Length: 283
Image (cartoon, rainbow, N blue to C red; front, side):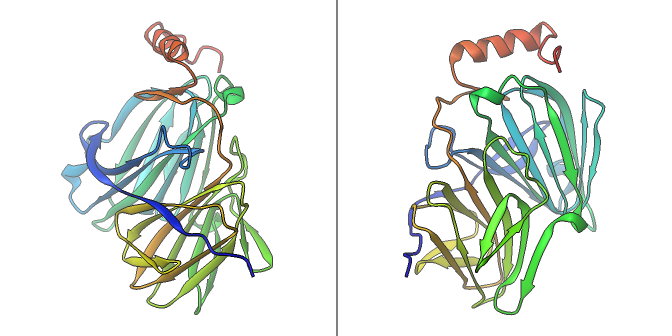
């Protein structure tokens, strides 16, 4: 029998703001090797339009991918490539900035609620100067597995092994192998996944409380897990959990604002290119 994964570090989310004063909760791991290939997770959650009305005006990126997932509400994406994405409740969108992208993002409340996540994913050095890409996928295209013992598992990206069967989300073109899933459950429901032991695993509880190998993890906390093969989670209450797994990128990470590169010289070049209007010239 394979051993189950244990929590070795818990990181609480913290309140901050970004864009034009948008209130968010954030957890970061830019310099944490166990977080890789992920860099940051932002949660947008509000029933007050004033918390996000300014949105995220046009801004640049280089060297990262972003995965945006809306549970409730809309998110409008526009970029320099001409993409206009109307992300609706339950859907997601992915962008690889590569050499450079300039985009804007506007959250829009639905039925008095806004709740979603933006996940930053690092790009390996070989992809950091590649052309930008964009892909969106609405609620109906996301893979769902539901039953009374499990609850509901929504697979956004990558491969998930549930029992003897592998399930795949609609997003498969990320720069390194990874998976992102949303597990929603009622008390005493549980899920068990078999994962690649070479990959990092982390769990973010966005609602309720769960236990992992008997250790409690409550709302607003992210847990980093060890390299055992089996992930076993049990719901203590009505819960919502994001499950992240991915192949770590064993490269230096240098972060400055919207840019994530491998050296300070590359950051300085990104700033220079943006200021001189050449960040997106080769896209």
